[in-house]
Length: 286
Ligand code: NAP
Image 1 (cartoon, rainbow, N blue to C red):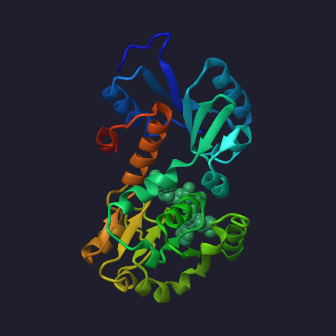
Image 2: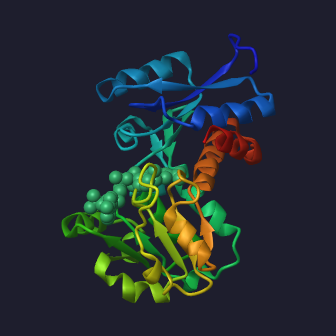
């Protein structure tokens, strides 16, 4: 670790709780390898003290920070500028100090699409099927639209929440792309999609044997389909294990985690960052 002096730039993550966050390990590994004079610190911030924490950050000249649960939505009112996609998503995970105050963006979107961009696909012909309609699904929707997908099938278990999900995108460029489906529509949806994304926690450790889609149904995906699970523990999840057995291309949640962090660090430092080192630090920590 670089020596901390009066000139060391402060970065960090706010959350409640924040102890479990893997971002400090990943970000400090990258900072050390770049030999920049900065440090990334986890800050436990109670929701009632968010305003005070932001004022404190301003007072001590924090360069930028990540926001995790439960601050991703609440932080928005303290920003002086926001990326349009983050505004449409309604969640910010990365904040940068700017002359007028704070600028917020959502690097989960970049994180989600980074491993997909490496695959040669004609996204304008692909209608992704997204399982779940929670917070992570929102970054996935924005990511799929940025890739060029014309429509996105959102699969949810609760009709009211599904309807609210669609309504929440009203007056944004993403609204037209969203189609809602219940889980019993999967047999009709899967044979026609090249991208199936799990944004539910089904299969997350310690429920390692659970899968959102059973093997026989998964087998109805086209041979060249991609199965993408946002979960990063276990690696692979049962969902990805089954998909891999069937010869599908699989992507797990680690790359999204690495790339959202790399995009944040790049924004703060305004220079290329070593995602390879971040990936290795994350894998060591996992
Ligand atoms: P969330 O806001 O709680 O949303 C979870 C969604 O899954 C909700 O739509 C929920 O449905 C649905 N769901 C939960 N259990 C279900 C079940 N048994 N059957 C059907 N649907 C179910 O959570 P989130 O923040 O979006 O996170 C979701 C997952 O993504 C987590 O595993 C998280 O670790 C992962 N994630 C990964 C990254 C990454 O960087 N790799 C980033 C963000 C999130 P209801 O709305 O009906 O309850």
